[in-house]
Length: 388
Ligand code: AMP
Image 1 (cartoon, rainbow, N blue to C red):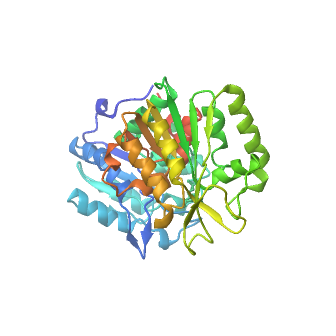
Image 2 (image 1 turned 135 degrees about the horizontal axis):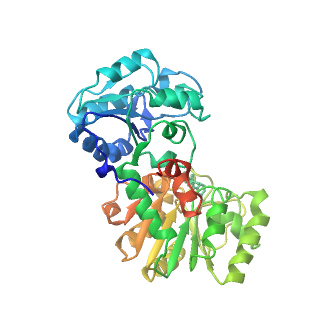
Image 3 (image 1 turned 90 degrees about the vertical axis):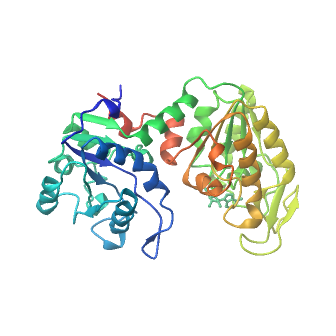
């Protein structure tokens, strides 16, 4: 059982809030603040209730203290958005930071420096988790994107803070994804794309008994096409996964699940060079970089009759305009369909982000790996640790 944040007494209390501020930076500036914006509702609520918010997050993958990964730009962005000074503590633990936390008044927020400046964070070290909990009375986790990792700030810390709850973003993620793991309405369709079959094996296996159809695009489709003996030219194929792809195709046939692969392709000489053309058989010297228009039509027809759709992974090399069409046309059809539509994965979200129809999806998950593991039915340590 998870506690509803709204039932906790926050007034006058120090609240440790695990956020996902792992935002992309370009030359030290935040290029997409989406993840910070997504956590503002929870932070504002805690402050309005008279709590003092001690915010913490990781940023990037530093192995030790490395100011290239400082959360300073996040503190500045938060100060601007919340209309109050959000100071950055010099570290996430230690005496200096402890004094700043003690001095924090009701309705004020402080941001701790990058958790991953300490390797103990990812090691889920008990002493480090204890230090993180020191001086706080309540724990709120709003970082769904790291909920599939048992780190000190997502799991270990809850041993020392018995008053705890998911933040509003975390709760929305759990509710939206539970609609898919519970009793989804049929026809239920899974659209999978992206670079690698290997990332999606678990989710294909677990969805095999649940969905009525898989629609496969992206580079991963070519490993399946090769397994069927189709020509794939110079497309990205995972040679060591061909056999596994054949097994998954066979499993789908046995169970009677439709496994739709691209029947035409947008190809070019290289990802960034040469004219793009549409073919139904990939020539030896070309790479498949997007699904073709006939495939889009087939996929859209499936989507239009679906009641539930989950989508993870772009259907082509969407970062390059000539190869973005498949992802965008399928995305638009899904957004405008009446199906419950849940998107997961940073790339999928980025691919549709600026489209006028992007707000029409039922839910865009902020978690990539976390949303896949949730769909696979794996218990996420960051959610389990919040339970009473
Ligand atoms: P993933 O992280 O597995 O979701 O993969 C996303 C990446 O796969 C994106 O950067 C896409 O551009 C890339 N991608 C999708 N389709 C293709 C393709 N046909 N060839 C090469 N890369 C692709």
